[in-house]
Image (cartoon, rainbow, N blue to C red):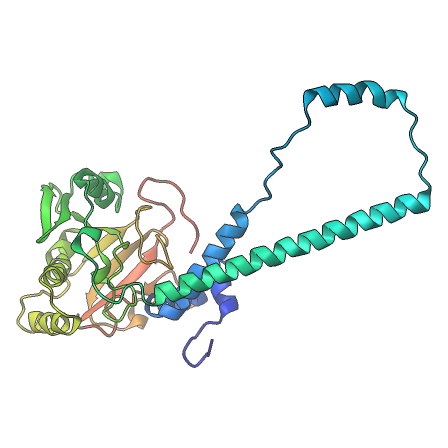
Length: 335
């Protein structure tokens, strides 16, 4: 990969997947991955090859020695004198046996490697054209309404999500499934909440459970609802961008309220094909501001700048802070 286009190389990508990069390097890698289809493909391929190698094993032979033969051998072998084999001949046999196994192992490794390379190449070619346009609406819907409610609630700890309002996606947009009591709103966002230039903007596999606090429910959630309505109405990306700009200009879409934040702590999330569910984190929303005001993306800083709205029509700055537990209280991987 050219470093002119990619600030990280392939070795750093693998180190990122293994959790071996420093915090600032991991942040840079994540920010680049969100927007780079080529690197997303590489990451997914690295993960796929690793998983296939971990799962691959040599099957044991299903052909056994009949019990009758075993019994006969057991009776006769002790009675026979062991054949005398000269030491040089024994060494030759052992050496020959080892050579045969070495060649066999080499052949197996080459065969498996070629198969994985070809499989990965096919996946890469598929992903490069996998999401060029919107899929059928059925692919974005979750048929089981109760399942979507549970996924939405998993975005935040139960103490928050249990009394939150729950929205589910229907044919015409989001609709209320459960009325809330605490001002929080939980929803499962879809791929069109990605940056407009994301290669997975139309990925029907994306599921992003998120719980907005009251301030964000009033000032950030309207953007999710508007984008969704425009998508279901069949607007193009260019039309959506223009409509969002006009919405903020006309005050139809509000600026982020002070204290607006959200929870994204669900194990069930699928941000995109390369990142999977990522790590549990909190998000904080502001009118356009600079990174130094939060110390974002500095060495050893836990705060990162989310690229979701960067360069987009929304005048919003979004900071992310990872947390150490999933919403169910279990420990999460270190970022």
